[in-house]
Length: 420
Image 1 (spheres, rainbow, N blue to C red):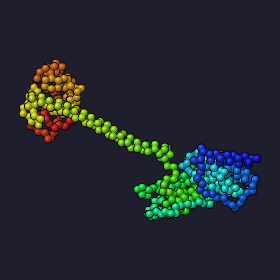
Image 2 (image 1 turned 90 degrees about the vertical axis):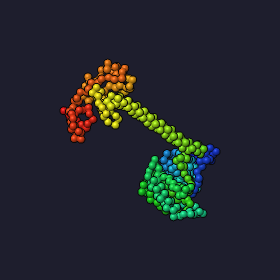
Image 3 (image 1 turned 90 degrees about the horizontal axis):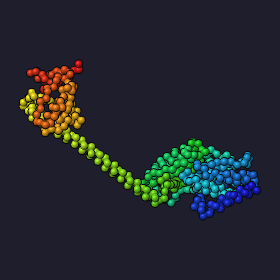
Image 4 (image 1 turned 60 degrees about the vertical axis):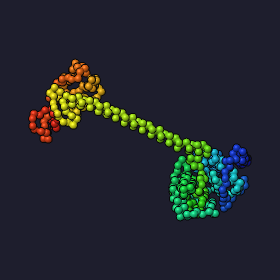
């Protein structure tokens, strides 16, 4: 009774797979093998355990890893089984393939104690011996393109060998519960080579690598595509993308083309806008710097014109006459006293130009012009200023300065300053 119910359940699943809603998910059959070394009797305990195992596998077809192994029954009639879905497929495709295979394998191998079936999307196998975490290299399934050879076999074999080695190296590492890897390489300006390698996740790194290296050796060189399958691993090499590329999963073809055409335009627009903003900012800063420099130069010229008018000293430093009433100062001294003719030190604008306040080297604010003097200066052309007091630090003439006459800090000399 139990066995009849399980067969009825499997029959319902198969019928649902052929329905109009799931027809597109029907797996693509590749090959199968019924190992006829031993068989079991109809209605035996082993047959009941096998049917229970296939039911358990099909009910676990939605596992994210795309892999599951389990047992059914007890020794000596215990049955071991597993399934493996291709690593790039969705859960729904994996589930459909496993459900179909669970019934298909019992139809193809009705009384065999060990069997395996391969599809494009998955494999399913069972056995009366422990097949978990063990490399099984037989039976095998090999296909390759026998009608076309490559035009440059040496270059093709070199690139194919490097690509297959890298793909196998990546597949042996366990990632997200899978031992699965794909790869591609350009073999010409318009042609790429694609590879896929996969092991059952219950294998160790060493066993997976051993299985893939042997599988790779079965693929003929110089052929435009080939595939090798055994119960523990598989390897495939083609000149077209036969697996789901990461960029091809997200959207339909039309929307992908629209997105791919929009991305360069968006990047170019953002680059142009960023460049325009940067150029504008640099231009504004340069204009502001030049404007401030022109303003400062204008004020310096006006101040020098004032000094020249009363002292007779030219811009070249020539002394054509001195006035005791209007002593002359070095321009760098005036810069330091007025903080580079800062607007914060500007007192006003007279008939002859701007007037600034400042502190000379002696640091005494009392020596600054009074407000009444400033008012008179703004209203007239001339004003008498007191002679600056001596600085609060001693100064001595440099060896390069002249020793003739009395030294004065107001003369243009080279001085060395010493702290007290």
